[in-house]
Length: 393
Image (cartoon, rainbow, N blue to C red; front, side, top):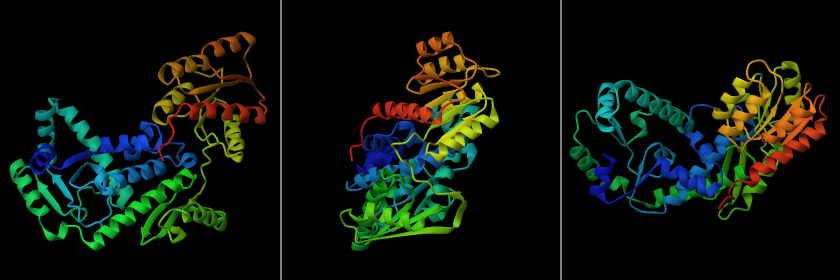
């Protein structure tokens, strides 16, 4: 359908993958961090990093840049980023019952029924998460989100293309002064959203005629300080005349708002089977604004390595199951860019030599001096950050 519409209309197609790639280039964030904006899974480090908010901000900025271009066909979830107030966009949803979709996937992609069902289920979960996150509506097929719903089991591709082409000629989807102002507001809110996350803050930004509104959906302990800082960050942006900051009192008041200091480690994974020790260590680091999550065995740490992408591991030597040396070997094989600090009460000089040869950054003994550990974590964080490309903004 998309390729047929492109051929008929001459519009340039931009899909989710292209938008994510553009956001990656603009932001300097890892591609995986941008991709996680579409994922329903929440990282254990999110409360420290605001990573999803950062990804969404850069996706909006990338889209705001693209919307300068005429004759654009947005294919995928990214179309939901366009506010409804921008009325000169035609919103189309292709719908069909599951058996039809499964058979179509089998025919087009040459896959078996079980694999087709798995892919469709995963895509539907992602779509539901996306519309729930952006629009507060977990039904991505809700007719209220679109101008047209096309039942593809009863409609040929040719008929669908002709219907969309006819709708594109309607006056209701032509640019007008009000919709152009809405586009300008969206572009300003996108720039402000990027400025906000680059300053380490997290909030929903909207714009109307130069007036910005920032909504925070977490419990704020020092609101006046936060408001003043946000107003300082956003107030100097070109086109901004006013900045209002408010806390959404109906949202997650049990979750305390934390600023993300990008100069401070925020994706540290502590791996130790001594539960009381490692929990206390995590709290002590958090008190120093270091974001640290906990794993109690090597297998859990390796799973989190894939799912949550920590930047630094603080790794115990002696653990049941997969021990520290095997975890280090696998970490350096799977994700060699992750820095590893050994922290143990049972090691020897020979252990230290082996770990350093395998690529550990440091070898520390318990009881650890918290200042020394923090200094090593800062060193690791700087190494990780230094390998990343700079933002183009």
